[in-house]
Image (tube, rainbow, N blue to C red; front, top):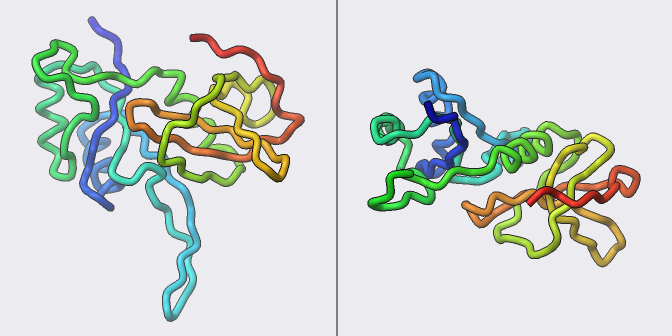
Length: 175
């Protein structure tokens, strides 16, 4: 039997939470990375949870043609990302390490900033601090600060977060 793998689903805009809830109700393991933003209206200011990758969420399933059909029957789901027409793999999966790194960053106390493109650079493994075990690319900003970018290549996007100098003990990441 094949092992469960992570896949990205494209969903209708602002329907990520509903799609995640419906998929979870069908017994699918779902990961919807969220960020908190303060939004101001004319009568109030409120913290709102928004999808870190608008229009996308991640599912961990053992993929088959039947499972693909089940996923696509969820009202808010548009398609699998990276679908390979005529290929028996049905869609490209996302490495477990990439999702694990993303989960650690989302759970960290640091602020998150979406990155709308892939960032070139050497992939490192953070060896200390709250982001220990996270694989990503270190970006040096003009103000001297370091930021860690965790990327999901399949989406062509990533998320950047703070990186304390004491937390970064660079170790080469596995290929």
